[in-house]
Each structure stands twice: as C-alpha cells, then as structure tokens.
Length: 123
Image (cartoon, rainbow, N blue to C red; front, side, top):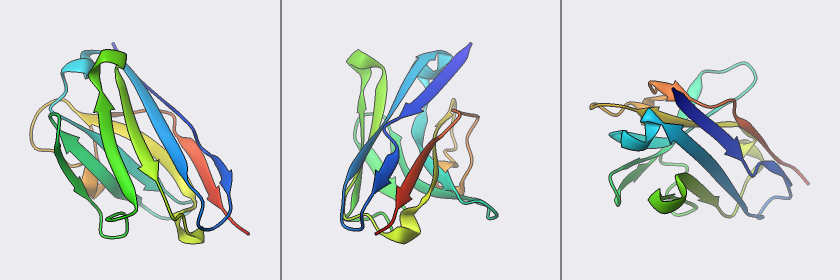
C-alpha cells in the first residue's frame, strides 16, 4: 500500500512563511523521487519542487530562492519550507512520489499523491 498525507497548510499574510509536511508509508519509502505540485481551482497541476535521493533537488522558477524541499527518512517525512509567500502561491499543495525514473513531479505528475493541504496567502 502507498500512503501520502500532507499537513501544515493554512492562511498567512503576504511575506509570511509556512512549512508543509508529508508523511509517507508503505512502498513510497523506496521511491526514486518525491516532491510537491500545486493545483488552483480551475487550472492544471503545477510542479513546485522535487527531490531525488538525499540532496538532488530542483525547483520551479517561482519557487527558487523562496522554497526549500527536504526529506527526513528517519521520520518518513518530506517537507517544503515556504518563505516570502505571495498571493499567487495560493493553491492546494500535494505531496507526490515517482517509484521509478523518470521523475515528472515538476511537470505536475507523479505515480502517487496525497489528498492535499490548502495554502491561502492574503492580506
């Protein structure tokens, strides 16, 4: 079984910070790639960040310099630290995993994903 469960979303003012967490279990622990994508109400999925192994990270242009992805294997948790949040970051954020290469999370894909956590940035 594959289990991905996100947490940490909420409402913040512009310039604020949030840390999203994704607890994973089952076969997901042996994934090739994990990451985050986000989805707005009426648009497609947009990749945010992905991590291959312990430290091979890549980010969407809008996330570079503001977001940091990390993984804690001891706690089976994936994190997304988000700083300097902007109203355009408002979306549902999903944790995703690719079991094998290639990693398509930055294209809004993934073999598995969780139910999502809402992030709202407004004054």
